[in-house]
Length: 209
Image (cartoon, rainbow, N blue to C red; front, side, top):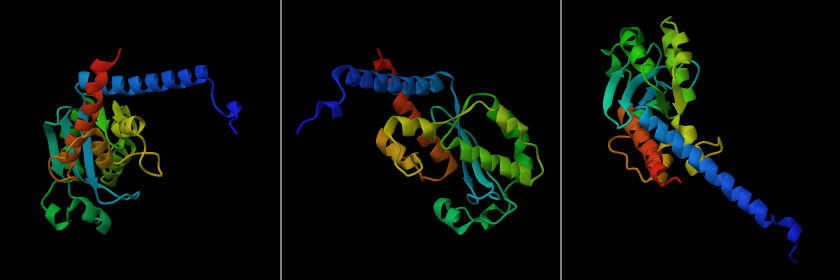
């Protein structure tokens, strides 16, 4: 039997629709702002996920996906087999690559020069900090970055796809209709994919009224 008390009235429904519309518009406006600010995109590949893990590749592109910076890094710890299976980077391949202290003076001013967009911001910044600390270098500059998380933006816009309430870059790209141009889980390609996802949301800004 139909019970009207179990269903919202018209005014409540209209309020919910309006709130959802405003929420969507805020996300689109945020993405558009990142485009306007000409933000940089950052991505890393790492030795693993734990508290000792370090960065083995780091890249920065502009918001259009143009490569600005890319380096492989030789870590001071082993690469976890599961991480290696994802990105394909071996310790032997990094034997002649620089370590964090050799790139820090070039990279840090670059990251501080513009707003910085990262897919899974907390993870990448944690791994950068762990890498710097492993070589006894300061990390205070990380907290001063104008960084924001593209993963959170995508999860809010397209919906979470996992039990953590987030969305993977692959799923965000799929939802945005973005094709990955290159090998996924390489830092430059992941930056370019992130940029494309952000731009796909920002492109809707012209439709806002």
